[in-house]
Length: 469
Image (spheres, rainbow, N blue to C red):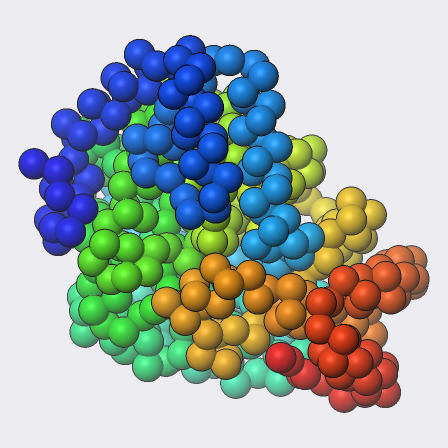
């Protein structure tokens, strides 16, 4: 029985409820009056249920689909403005005991080199990332209780946060590790992580168990209930995501929103972020072997419908996607992207060693990505102020819902961009960035904050760092 307040995976992600939702959406895909009513509700910016959002995703009426994309763009602009937060993944280890059929780190893969970074190697990786200009990382590692115990993760976090190289500093570390215990989540929280990220991969239990035939990840319920344990362990911000292509996209979309509804119903706050990876080629993984792949048009519509359904949630797209795809979906809802990414263990400090988790489609340097964003009219941001000021969980959501981002995140984005321009940018990027900052400063609503920000920008040019609202 479907119950969003239940702590049992098969009750808050109900297979029967999803099938009923998909049937309703399919039957009404050309029901103009019903779709218009959902769009009108969405214009209130209070979000939609999984059923309402699934109807929009199924909509077959071209003029209403145009309205849908336009509304997504409006909501994105109203809540997140033209800021785009930048981060990079940092792979610590690819040892893994699971048998996931879509990931080259699966235990049966005997020819991929298995690598686990030492703390000294982690320092080299972090320095390389700092030299690029990154301030925010997402650490990644396979599930292996022998090679990758929680103690290794905690020690690595301590190492990452401790490194100060020239003007570089990693100010926020998000963590993407396998489902674990409340006690271990409490340890991660005490270590000062940002967001805990765990992709569901697929919400279809039957498909999930087939795709994870061996290893602890085979346990669907334990994996799906991980976010509840993370929040019980004190972690305010959690990040959801599915790997599109493993099961049918409409099933995944409904399940993803049901998970968001569950977190809101039980913990009073939905996901801090939702990520949108699609299955890609990697080592012994052929994406053509998966029959549920989605094209760029469907991908864009999923992102637009998600933005409408959860207006306040951060939305992430990685370098799995090409420059062209990323540029298309930025305006429909994406608020965070990776740049200059390496998906191999030790890939920033050394040459490619064959340990990539997936092929990167956007191979540009971070400087090239930043220059591209600015030419597209976006403000590249390295801001971590909310996390460091305690504006997390329900406190961040309240702040976001009250549309205070333009008074906080906008000037913070400009300040961190100025840091990047002074310390890392190429001459052309710096020139474009200085013009952008001068122009965008006037979009900060508060004249008082404008003045403070202008003075801090001068201080940054004279060598001072780390100002934030």
